[in-house]
Length: 424
Image 1 (tube, helix red, strand yellow):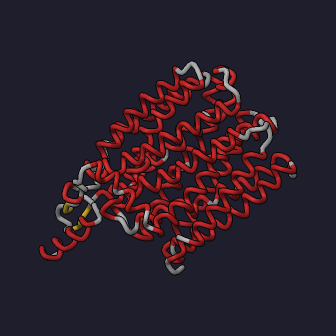
Image 2: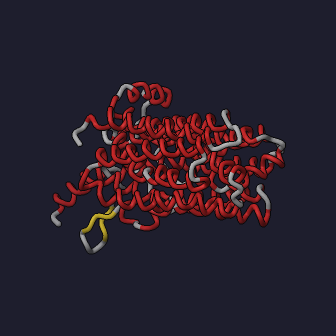
């Protein structure tokens, strides 16, 4: 390749944020995107921290309640506490990642995650557990928000959506195995061992992080003061398209965390499902997410993310309404809940990646900040979803059913009215 052509390729690829170098003797340009499975594995692990931090202890929630002297609503608030830290923490880590790069903030976040997990393992009351879950969440969200920004550093448009779908397919292994593994740890060593396991996961991920290259070079960093960058969220909030994408995902997350908070009691307590079998029922939905993400990654370049987003949110609305009817009437018993929940959760594969990629498209120079805002809206909505289920808990699946139905309808309305402003 002539020198001028090579320089042009470097400048073009560098604009996408990829650290570049020539492969000796080949004239080929390589960068972070060419590290293959290693980058995929570490980014998937970072994106999976939100799931594994909660899914691993879901089968233990009734046992934790008894040991800590808390009722159903009190233990469900450990999920809401996590979401508070997770949503607010992202608003800090996004601008920090845009200013200082991606790896250092993620490393600091992982240290906080380890400290918070150890605190959870030693908690002696529900209130202490909620406090340590907030610390755990503030640390965990650094990896989630900045791993999305790292994808945006490396890819654009439909390719970014495709890569996010691939990452989410891989990271779905964590929630797929989480409740199953958590149930086994609970049976063998008790619920506190679950949080010590998370300490180990955090330390291993911290070690793996330093095998990744930095995806945001110094010349592309946003050097404005952090205070001004945080105030800049106001500018993003005035962007109608970003709010449309974030709203579609936000309502979905409200439903997902209603599902996470409600199913342990709907399945284990109300329908008398053994804790080990609960993990398998939970895994069915994760398999659905994986399949939908694979399909989405193959269709997005052909049909566009907006069209798939609208179809996915329509499916969540329909599934939510069916679920609410089944939860109210007890129609179908256990399977009357499992089937519509499977459809609702599976549609995630068509919503999350497309909504995130769409929201970040117009802000390549502020990918960390935009990713943080979208994540805060997503998980902030999750706070309301899980809190509503806990607040209105009545010993039946009905509170979970109506919250998920409203979430599905809201997601569809946002996608249809806002995210579809671009021709689909």
